[in-house]
Amino acid sequence: MKTETLESVKADISPSTVTASGDAVGPTAPPVIQLKNILVPLDLSEMSLKSLQYAVPFAKQFGAKITLLHVDQPADDADIGYPVSFGPQDSAAFEMQLDQIRATKIPVEVPVDIAVRHDLIFDGVLEVAREIRADLIITTTHGYTGLQHLVLGSTAENIVRRAPCPVLVVREVEQDFV
Image 1 (cartoon, helix red, strand yellow):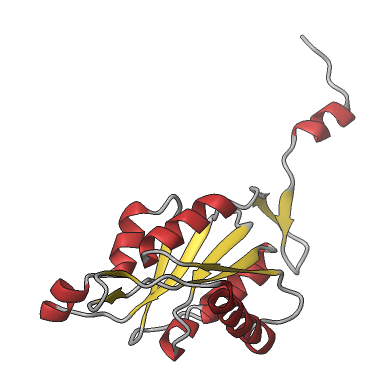
Image 2: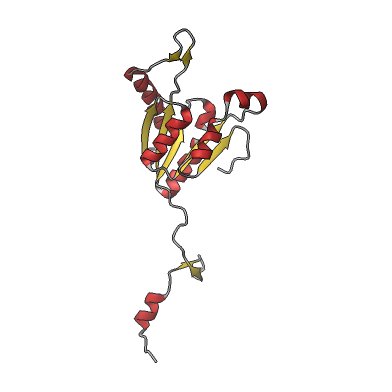
């Protein structure tokens, strides 16, 4: 029979959580979810800013960085028959708007990156999600139904279907948990 010292037995015991009364309640497991990078696509509308109500608390809780992203989707110009191109001044204007949102809506202790893309919206979101190795995408939906959904499609739905990570979709009218 093997003789064990008190030190070797202590080393085999997992740490436990201790309540306020000093009672041990069992082993403590490492956090199941680890978030380092949260991607928040914004179309710069008031509705899209609702996603920050979720992103900021998650970032604080997990010590994660938020990446604010605006994807400017080219519009077809019927007169010329192809998408309108964008210049650096367009990106700079969007970056300034995102920086203003960062300054007014996100506490300074939360790290934030800003990105602007010119692409189809869901393609731009998915590209950035892969680039930053997003652990979570938090986006909003306008909740189009019926004919509007058929005509406009659902950007949020396309993101959910193709995202490389979990996606939290925030609706305009919902029961908030934050």
